[in-house]
Image (cartoon, rainbow, N blue to C red; front, side):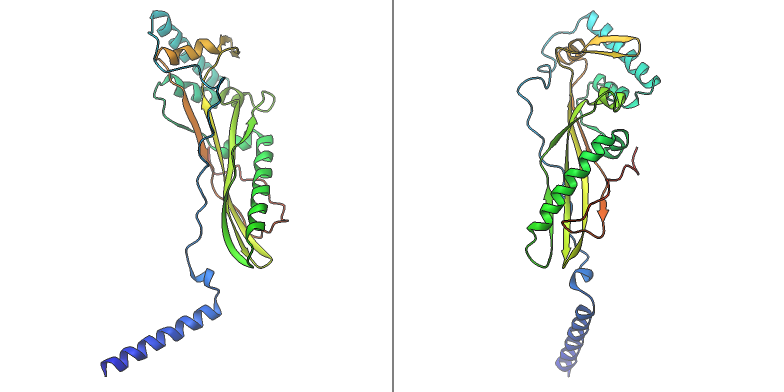
Length: 255
């Protein structure tokens, strides 16, 4: 009697499962979905022009400490004239931790419309290519671009020009295909190495200084170069196929 009841229960459960999977596609019952990949591996450091030299390999003197104090004043001045991100990046450099600094891709795209256009174009191309790689009638595929370059010119944003200047960006995402339609989820990522090199001068408010002078604080161990990173929120396109023209990525929800 015990085994008869168990068999009856198992048959009833199997019948219910068959009914549900017939009425509802399996992918709707399965809560799991491919995760959007993280950013690509860091781009290789350029052989020259991407850093002033080893940290703390020179002794600091009285004039170096005085210079550090002056650059603190420059950072405060930058913030007071609206260069808030430039000020924050400089303060982090002078903070001498060398820890990574997070920037919001959404904020950058809001302030740099041409960067937003470039990010959209990269997402468009990568997502369409991923769609075309799904050979079956349905399925999911994660994708990741390589790093591309963008330069924040002064006429686009003085703030981001002084914050990062040239930086790298990438897109990662997941394309889902179901017959002739599907969906797209993706993120924008940014990367930069914050440093001050030879051969340039910078003017912020009433202050003009040579980049090497500010970079020398890294050599003296009073400030430290660092890496800028940032990963945006999820952008979703609910009706997507290879020929879909996607909307621009979001610029909201972050500061």
